[in-house]
Image (tube, rainbow, N blue to C red):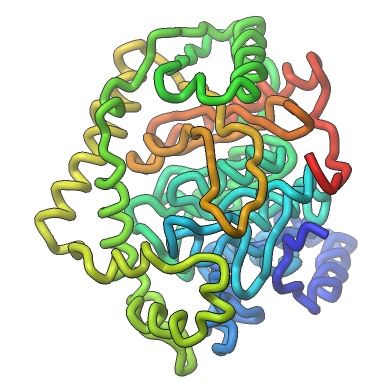
Length: 447
């Protein structure tokens, strides 16, 4: 119905029985031993296809080995159910792309309204958690690709600090912004999965404890990141009130003035330059006779336009081929401006100036209608400062508006995941006492 899974693993039941047998024998591998998990289809699995949603890779042999993060999942005793559909090439193919659609996996739909977008690019991961297909899923984010589907589908998403979770064996977009992370129905479950993915010995789930909001200082950057959706603002204002009632100090006037004149073309230049070189490195390691460069992928798509380009083109791929590379002055200057706006004069400056533990904003407006003809019409989002800084972002449902999920996101500085988990878990508990958990989806045809 929601088409969240593009490749189920036929061996999943067998592996689940093996994990059950280990449990009976007292050989648990960790707190998530035996838990099922879906992995986004841009993450390498040696026993299943990895396609990034593209038919250009679908006919090729499986990757030679698991991605580093998949190895960690298996070693921790999790059972990989299969691969989750995604927006093709993680939404970096075309400016007019349709989130949730890929040539290989088809169209993922939102469980809260089947005519609504599941978000991008970790569409299948978010929809699968919301639909109850799996309690845990892995997504990847470059700018919004965990946060958006978490918000649209009413689940929890953690985009970690870039580098916390390894990207070895993940189809790349941007080495400076790509970050795999967990998606789950609760903050605690997402934090537990983050502990496995990070593999650094930190028990992030131990920070998911109610009652730790007292003394936390949380900023509210209203300019630019509030006010674009009344549907998102209302529950977010309620979230701020709940945080305050639990003892957090709310600090207004914490706007990121560095982002007021930020040129989004800088971020795009950086991503496209890193895409061209990064994808070539990734494809060189894939077995088979498939594409080896971005130019090869562009040519393959043109040759199979009837299936691959039926809904939208590949303008971003073409721009990447024509634009400056990672060795250029243009790239270096754009990257420096991104870091200055998002990190140095942005998140870090605001946190330091106001002695804050985190920032909070609405995440996105409610899920937009699916449109395979016209470009998607998002009203706004909160993800770019954290994306260009390489900093973590934790997204938690804040309620339903017009029958659709909306969420808040907590921003932090580098390696602040424990603090963000504490704040998000405290908010989640307060929300549940106030209005109850987010209602489960009923899969209506239209909202």
